[in-house]
Image 1 (cartoon, rainbow, N blue to C red):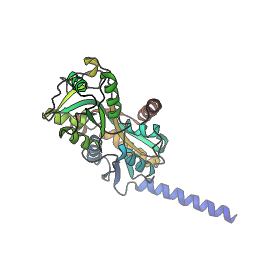
Image 2: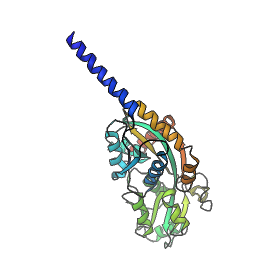
Image 3: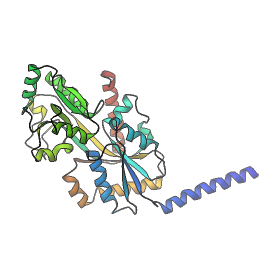
Image 4: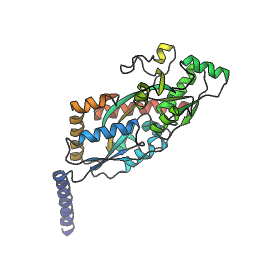
Length: 315
């Protein structure tokens, strides 16, 4: 009898604590773990969301950049974060699933409570403004003149950039060597500084530099021309099969309190419908919104793709 009373009291205490959290939440800032360094596309997305989220949430959102290993350090940190409602974070593909496929990740999709995807960012092939290359044919000619001499900046093994480089080599017969960068801002600096022959990256990373005349975009890795850079041809138009993009979104650690999760989802819904956010994001992000269920299914489907890719050509 005494043991039963003790168990009942303990249960009541736990339920009371949960109710108190639901009533009081949030009592402190929410941390957003950004799995990349400051200045890149994922960081830009997170900071823009955080700025507008404070209109709809009584506490600020604080950015914590944890970069390295193609996002894996940040993804791992998010999966292991306290499940108290005060930590969410960014995930981006194909890195997120590629680490799982390569058996390097200390997480699975089930270790996350998926939130929203905000961005689907098309791949581009860029060269510095000082480059002698103006077309894909120029690159192929350089390869033939000096085989194995060309280099390309990527985000490392398992990234969309690395997949794009592999497709480029297969489609053109080139042997461009990957030069992995530590984050998207570093990849951009490597290209703009002329330290590599070319760069494989996403449009949002380089669009402003392209419009400023600091780099040239030779081709888009999309099915059709992109409305923000309509003068740039696609690889398909040029007769080459190179298709690539990257998605960027948010998740929380699995086990995130249900009431807190519902509040965070509500904040996302309000931010993504905010005309001021949409106007600001239009010039900075390649927006493509997916809600929790659709985004989770996208990740599950993508994992099947990266699993097959890894079986064929491990990274």
